[in-house]
Length: 347
Image 1 (cartoon, one colour):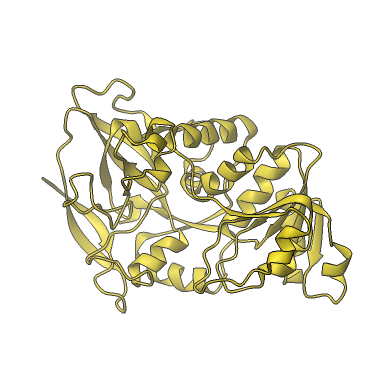
Image 2 (tube, rainbow, N blue to C red):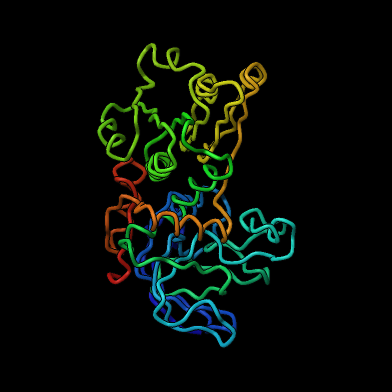
């Protein structure tokens, strides 16, 4: 075991604090990574504060990881010391179910291994995430990262980027499609950038007039305030796709009415309470209400390569490791444009 520096949540009501973490020595198929940057995802906060009810303390969050390979196991063929790499939301899967064999490890039928607060495939070893100086990951779940782009801005692509890229690819969004994005945050700003790069006509739907300028700079072609009296009526039957990134409780029916016949509303946010959906909103327009998770390893690599080719990164605000608790509060207040990223050299 190798003891390294990290930051951990020790209890739901306590701030994150330094923690001496033991990492395993690299096995034959393992890659050891020095973490340079780690993005701060809302899932980190949910886990640290036990809002999903399954946190095992101490918990080390972080699943938007970019770094350099320091050592590799004797059987590793894809990577060598010095390579720039990334690690996303999961670090292993069963490898033999139908979904895994179809490169859909995110939907592993036997349960993939999340990067933190989860059990390894041995079903007994707990995982710890990227709020740490190093991580050891099996080769098949390590991703190649281009040095063309600023690495601190690449880190959030490992979650926010792939979470929005995957549904855009799955449902075939392209030039000629009209697409709306609900919620301009960490996910929403990536949805705007990616959909616009694919040729879609993008409309930002927001409750805040302050976000109009940002939406335009990110690539949105239109901005509509949903709080204005006639907006929703005027936009009825307008969109081929809606990407809903909002995790707060809201009325899906209002947005379903904005879809054309055969339109698709894709849920990426997870509100805390079940939603009520009027069947007529689906039936009378043959509309679909669907959800999507992150992509598999193959698709995540495709996304990283696509972003490098098209010069797409996340808009980030850099923080020191000891600013993480303040960053959590600011994230909850919506005071970040649009992702905090930790400089792990500051730990």
